[in-house]
Length: 80
Image (cartoon, rainbow, N blue to C red; front, top):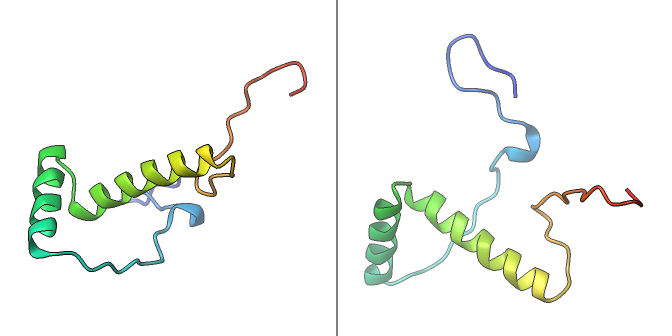
């Protein structure tokens, strides 16, 4: 990551959030999500994104599929 002279670090292209998902929820669901995000100390969108990522990782791994947004970690075995 490059750091600008005065400001936030420049994000890498792979880290840019350039796509949106729109969902419909009830007012009570939204209130609950906001309260949970506040308890976690993070913005609502970050809370939702983190929870969706965790569920997607679990479900894709159970299905034996690759998780597109998680980089593989080399384990350093004899064939690596």
